[in-house]
Amino acid sequence: MTVSGCKISVFDNYKAYGIFLMDSSSNNISNNSIYADGNDLTFAIIGYECYNTEISFNDIVAVGTSDLYLYKSEITIYDNIRLGECSNTYSLIIAYSSNNNIFSNNIKSSSKIGNIPEAYADSVNTVIGLDIYFESHNNTVNNNTIFVQSNDPFLYGMGVVGSIIDKEYTSSVNNNFTNNNVVVNGNYLQLALFVEIMQLILCFKIIQWI
View 1 (spheres, rainbow, N blue to C red):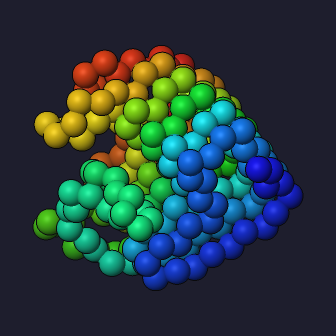
View 2: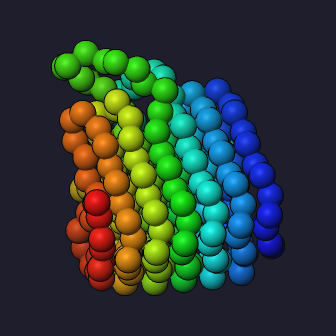
């Protein structure tokens, strides 16, 4: 499948997905403007069991909820498909996906959270630019510009996760991050790159952040 030269804008209170690639391969997602605004799950691009796909030269924007929320052990992304230990807001997320090439995208992530109390209490609101999850191997993330800014307590530019802590024993191997410009602005915890090392995760990385 090829999606090119499109302007995609979506708002939904429950599942605001700009492009959803599921159980697919050899896709080309390029030169698009993709905007997702939601009040629960907000993913501008999501790939689940997605292989040999190119995602390039897109403007990718996710604007998450204005509500504070508590920890969820898993989220349901579609019918009976669930992902554990995930956030509600991603500009780009792939899970159980390998051999994909993500390059030269302009990625922005934010939320509608206004001024919130200094103490976050039990809120785990998290906004993420780009993330690779669970049994995802040999993906290349190159030459992207990633900007994450919001009042949520936890902000991540980009990352890779191998498995759910103490629950599964999977891995994400040989994912390569090179020459990415990452800016993360927030009030509490900000990380340009997050790597969760569980089992046999191997992540080669050359990163530039500002």
